[in-house]
Length: 392
Ligand code: FES
Ligand SMILES: [Fe+2]
Image 1: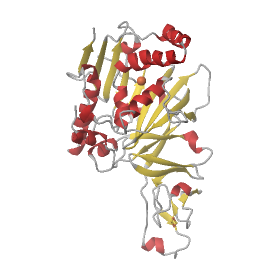
Image 2 (image 1 turned 135 degrees about the vertical axis):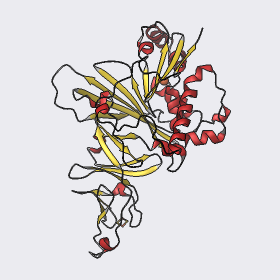
Image 3 (image 1 turned 60 degrees about the vertical axis):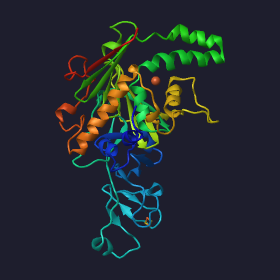
Image 4 (image 1 turned 180 degrees about the vertical axis):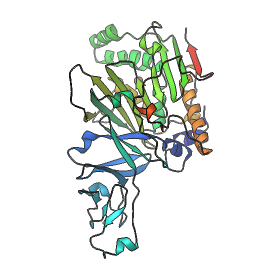
């Protein structure tokens, strides 16, 4: 159990908070490039900062603070120009560095005498997604996870904005036991309420199997998570999924396809869950630059939650504890070992950043950043970084 103060320190993403400072050391996806095609401007909130993402007439991306420096009107209504973005109200124009380069109704000497700028951040495109970095300079390299760097793959992505804090979405991913229950026995229960036939079909295909053990292995950049329900040869045990600190999960092993989950802290009470998938096809393709994207709602139009899909079930367990789970009221058990480990890792890395250090998985080596693969269990464990929990 955490104290209310520890809970608040672990969950707050604002600038100048311990967790906000740690999370700002990493890149996050903020949009699929496709989302700028019809309208080259998009409101984005990341780590509690209200921003505007745009593509100018020269094809350059920009990410700037939402409020115009003049009289604070929103640049979400701005006009992308050949270079930069122009405010709708009086036409002030800003370049991608946030520097104001034109003030049509002012004297020509105004800008040279009183330079004006707004906050601007680094953005890069990879795998059909647009990533942003809000931290201190020099910015690290944008991690080239395997599926993002495959040039012969067809990409697709989907996502949900979940109205809760990012940590509870992450903690669900460090909880393998829930697969047996939430996506197994509860799923069958939901279907049985609709019709016995649906439940029987589901159980015939996906009969929930009892989890025999779960394991967590620390590696240089994060944690490998595994679970065993049938045999030691099953992929969930042999390979598992890998967390690349702090919020990227590479799933499953395959040479022909890959998937990653990016958990993006929008602000203290909203999180973007983004699933990105890449399929390598057996034909010669031109280099792929697009990634199709669609939103998956977690709730029905009447506000009830969609419990009849695995995604809806994960959404339900993320939002029902409240916007921020009151962790001072929890009762953790031994099956929560992964959650305890992840919280400890976050606390250690926050302390490291507080002491002026560089946290794990900040990439600065070009050679090691060409194509980041899932680590292999056993080759990467650190010291006593192996933990196993057995169930009867
Ligand atoms: S408020 Fe933006 S130019 Fe005046
Ligand atoms: Fe799940």
